[in-house]
Image (cartoon, rainbow, N blue to C red; front, top):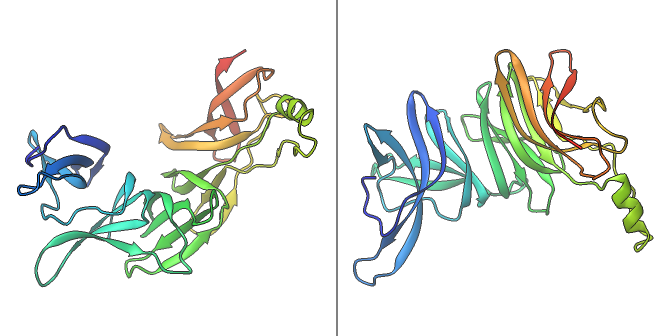
Amino acid sequence: FDHATEAGVGFTLIKEIQGKLYAIVTYVVKDATSDYETTITNLVTLEGNTWKLVAPSKKVITGLLGIESLEYYSGTFYVGGYQGGVTKLYTDPTTKETYWETVQTEEPYDLDRFILLKTYKGKLYACGETSEYKKGNTYSMNSDEVWTLELNQKKTCKSIDEAKGKLYIGTEDYTSSPSQYQETKKYNPTQQPPNLSIRSLYTYDGKDWKAITFNTTGLSEGQIVVTTRAIEEYRGKTYIAVETNYDYEFATQPSLYTLEDNGTLTPITWWEK
């Protein structure tokens, strides 16, 4: 690492972009006059055996906690984080100084934290949680940095990726299992029954958004997929990593599905009772 640091360098994420390897790192620097230490987040690229800062100026990523995504769109780097909105790496045309700036925070745009980014069909897509706890939106941004609300999925975004020409949004929800519900109801008469109509995966083909319903093949009665963690295309198949509501009485706990072109979801069971 070609920058002075008071401690080790922490890597938040790493990604190949246009044939080069990039990473988001955190490191500590000390002020020469006050000995005050500051933790800095920045973008680096691998040149030979050395990681070098892409934005070497002192203006680094601020206001963002836990960078969760990095995308290169229309000649610009964008990052999304645990908190702080979408930020881009900007070069001042006059001073040529490079720094990070927030792209959008004004209403009606509402995307506040847990932000994931993905380029798809000429636009930058951002999904995450809104200012309202555990509510989610997905936006697209064009090259003029005009934002459009694409999907109000109403839940926190946990994954965004492209597979076989389609964009996928995975969300997180929660519901109890039948036995948990019966047990809790003994002590809490107002306990609501399990919500077995949760939709945790959305797909977009460039024209229409659709919610994908996980079939019950391989699932026990009262078992449902509540969270989609990851989507990946491999050798012509689309793989989806999921979580289901848990119950010790369930016979299996599927954590991976394959999605066929006709919409059929087939569970791959990793754990059996």
